[in-house]
Length: 261
Ligand SMILES: O=P(O)(O)OC[C@@H](O)[C@@H](O)c1c[nH]c2ccccc12
Figure 1 (cartoon, protein in one colour):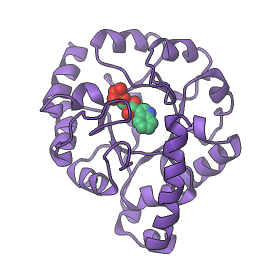
Figure 2: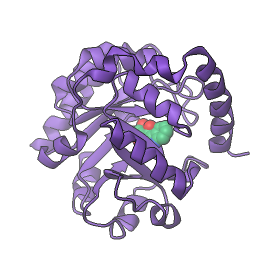
Figure 3: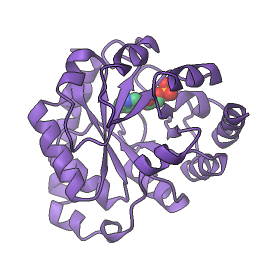
Figure 4: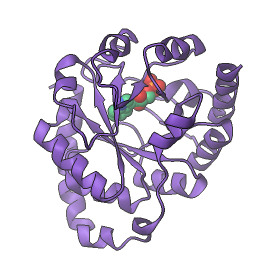
């Protein structure tokens, strides 16, 4: 079993238990269901930097990135830095995140918030909405075309934007669906952890013009961002490069300042 298959196997167990603990009806009564949403699409169209900064304590490929990060400090630091949006990992077992982190993030900024998790059930989309998300991530590697359709339609009904992540041509083929707002190319292979920015470059030409293109993972230099902008990328998802420092907000501020210089 590769790591992605392991994550998904555990996720199924987690969702089954959660459904019993917090039924959908209860999620739908959450106050956050009613709040105004922030558009990442709009921010990426307007922004010059397009940085989507991520809160990430650890990952399967990196045992510790920033175990003791204070999510509120990190998120408000990212907002001050000028990020276009923020991604918060909510998977506990493999990434050390939680929905509690997400709620605190929501309370700490007015930027579009992406719930970063492995979504394989409608339940998690309703849960994302109930915790104040603006955007959900769908990962093509673990979903069928039918599921991508079904999940993205539900997201639209809930006024959530959809970022669909792909890593190769085959995944991209099944992802050209009109209810998807943004296409993310993950430079990291989630099965082997190999990272190559060539993946973003190679796939860029195959992504239809009406999708906003986002390059994800392994981004740590201004040169890389400038290079990828030439390939039409509008958004850049950056986690580890900021989180590995003891002041992620400050690190993002310096990065964005250099990018704009
Ligand atoms: O820390 P990095 O290399 O900057 O990567 C951030 C983000 O792209 C990465 O965390 C990510 C991309 N797709 C995912 C899917 C699930 C979990 C995590 C991810």
